[in-house]
Length: 229
Image (tube, rainbow, N blue to C red; front, side, top):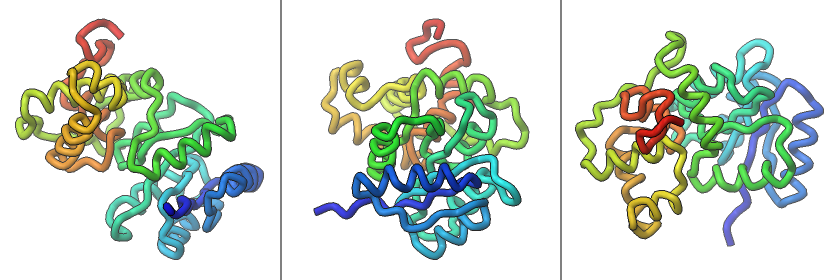
């Protein structure tokens, strides 16, 4: 039997931490620690070694962006996934967090069902990205903010098919949608995606989306098929 995800909740609002904790616990998800700022979040990760961190961006002292960078920079072996919590879906800090390795983001007014599904999805290694929101987010901030750590990669290591798959990933397509587009099985699609991530040294699909834009594989304002988005 698969063990339930182990989660750290980092938010400066006690009501948010308590509410999210109760929702997750009711579904059998193990909330192993809470944190009120970035330093506490890093300490909690070191102490409890969770599978996932729900990370608020705007916290006093060390914010969630810096905490995310620390956690995902090799602070611990096999670091946890990080999902960013935000009240605004087009936030430059969310984009910076994605470039730092966060696996996706959630709005704080998320429904309980969506919260639970997101935690379980992220635990499996998938990125949590709403395609339309993510596309607008990346297009708004790609290569415009010098404070973000751009994910520049050499795409020449990819095969022509892998380039096509990466372009479609950047458009927000799921594995099932990729399989339909390329007339492949989902297993084959997963293999392509895994090879793309490995060749480019990326953690997950979230970073692949950023790379697709920052390398010019997808032009802001133009969808993955070359049509206006």
